[in-house]
Structure formats: C-alpha cells, structure tokens
Amino acid sequence: MSMSLAVEAALTQLRTLRESHFTVVLPLMQEGHKYKLDIHAMAVVDRSLALLRGFCDLVAARNMIAAAPLLRCQLDNGLRFFASTLVQNPHDLADATLKGTPVRKIKDRHGELMRDAYLVEQLTAHVPWAKSLYDQASGYVHFSEQHIINTIGIPDEEGMAQIAITGYDGSVWTDQK
Image 1 (tube, rainbow, N blue to C red):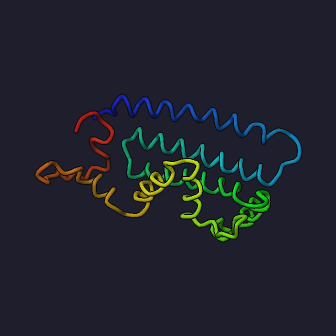
Image 2 (image 1 turned 180 degrees about the vertical axis):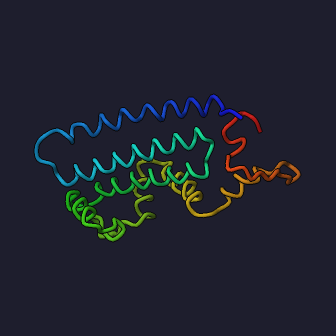
Image 3 (image 1 turned 90 degrees about the vertical axis):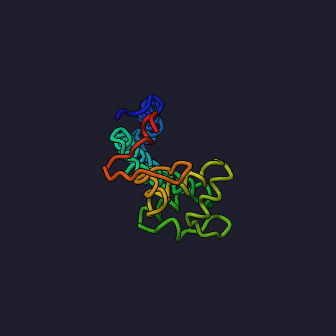
C-alpha cells in the first residue's frame, strides 16, 4: 500500500525545512561571545532537526502511532523557547534551564508559573492552532481514542469497523478508505 501523493508532497516540503534550521542557527554559531539564550536556541534547533528527521522517517514508514508523539515533542520545543519571550530576562531562563530547572517551575514576568497549559494558552494568542495541535498530539502521547482509531479505523454508518493488528497505519496514509 503506497502513500497518497498529498502525504508524499507534504513529506518533501517538511524535509526542505531542514535547510531553514541551518539558516536560523548559523549566525549564532559564528565566532565570538555566546549568550546563554544563543546556546538555548542552538539546542532547540538541534532537537528540532532530530525530531523532524524522525517524524519524516516514521511517516514514510506509515507509523503514525510513533510519528505523532514527535509532533508533541516539536511543539514542546516551541513552547519552551516561546517561554523566553514571557520572562523579564530570557538569559536567566536559559541559564536556569541549562542548570536543570524545568520551565514549569519558572515564573513569567507576571508571576505565573509557566506550566504547559499556561504556555499553550499564551502561544495560542499568537498562533491560533497551537492548542488544537497540543491536544491532538497529546492524544498520541497518552493512550487514547487515537490509538483505538488507528487499530480499528473509523466505523462506517452502521458502526462496523475492521480491526487490523499490523504495526502499520492503514488508510491514513493512502487515498484508499
């Protein structure tokens, strides 16, 4: 069973994002003094590249159950870096993170702890689809209806579904139903 042309095109587009990662990080890697936030940003970009590669490989292998949690990790990457815009001193946040302090234990400039729910709420004010992606991708991190749907598919009008235990996701990746 081959992937749909739309999925193949989306994978090609995602893989081209690799170059933009380098475009963003190269200026930070030039010789000279490195700020703690620069180091933080380089780690975010490095993690993003690894997640992107893994996601594309898993989608190509038609393994949504393993690929989808990587979307959640990628969003986590964005949330943690976005947190640097919510604090009084982003270099202090980077320093605390480097020393092992979880972002959820750090307060923003208004005294709010930056837990995931708070960060998602703040990011959604700028990126309207962030909460939806967070909720859907989290459904793949924690066992949920997403895993059941991947196993049985979406039932037809009579409520009938076909169970398949294959290790691959079915019609999600093809033009077939």
